[in-house]
Amino acid sequence: MKNIHPNYNNKATVKCACGNTFETGSTVENISTELCNMCHPFYTGTQKILDSARRVEKFETRITKKADSVRSKKDKETKRRADREDKKKAELEPIK
Image 1: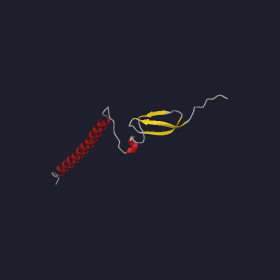
Image 2: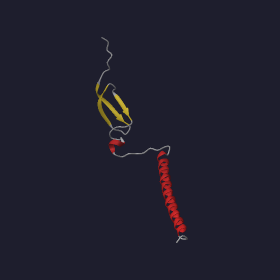
Image 3: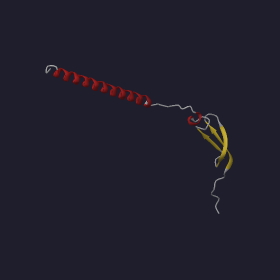
Image 4: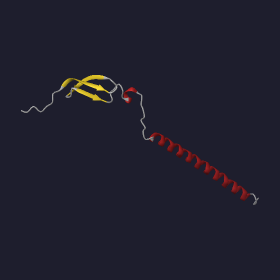
């Protein structure tokens, strides 16, 4: 029978970019990774938003513009209602 299965190492060393090292089981002896449980934002609770294209700022400005336009529409509507009521009152006064 052919020997096609890889050799399993019980003490494979994992090295993270933050400097943390630990051992695990793997078919590779040395593993290097960018994130581990010591530096991953989900595990540490410190989330960093990397926004190279200013997407977050653009989204926030779009939301504030939308909120301002909704407020201005409500203000215009209340002004129109007040003008209509004044107009109705002005039309009814000569009748009395």
